[in-house]
Image (tube, rainbow, N blue to C red; front, top):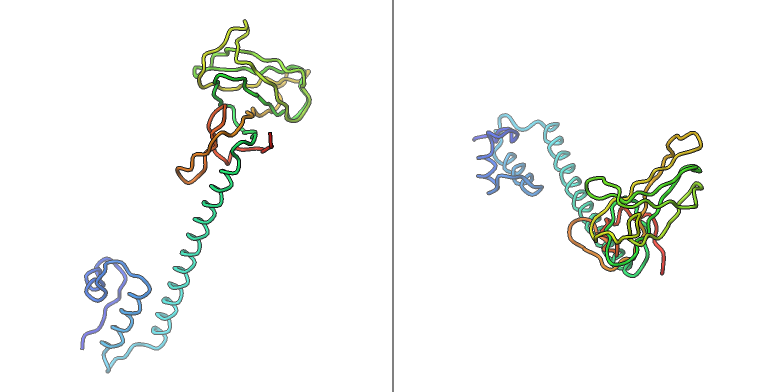
Length: 220
């Protein structure tokens, strides 16, 4: 009688296909090969019981790993669905986004800044895509923490700036003219939600942002 060779390695792809009808092995294919090996073993030289036990252990581990993988995939899918449903509930809410990018439309924009310490000089610069400062806003509140100010979309001469994409840059200095750690913030109203891709994207009156960048949510 013939024996079944070691099933590891690319050289045995043909044997696997002949026995199971497939070039990839699942848990049922493993059992098929195991039974075929027992049926075709040499009666004068039967399989070592220790080796047989090891093969059964391999099957058990394979089945457990496949079950774990299926459970993880199910949890990931459920988590994504839950995130999308949660995002839909944010329509009409006010969100604060941890970002410097925003869009200027036909209404005022709420610019924000977070300071790690009190500043003695503070300037908010609205910059275009080339890094050119088009408007400078000087807030009066320079204490540590998060603060917001409404910008009407005009430059330093009071002229309206064209609608489009802009970036908020912050200059924060202490009494020694040393820089203070800061973070630009944008506050807007959620008008819609895009559910394409693995993450939900919030559409606001000042741009579109990933749900993961949202710092806080408030009712209007």
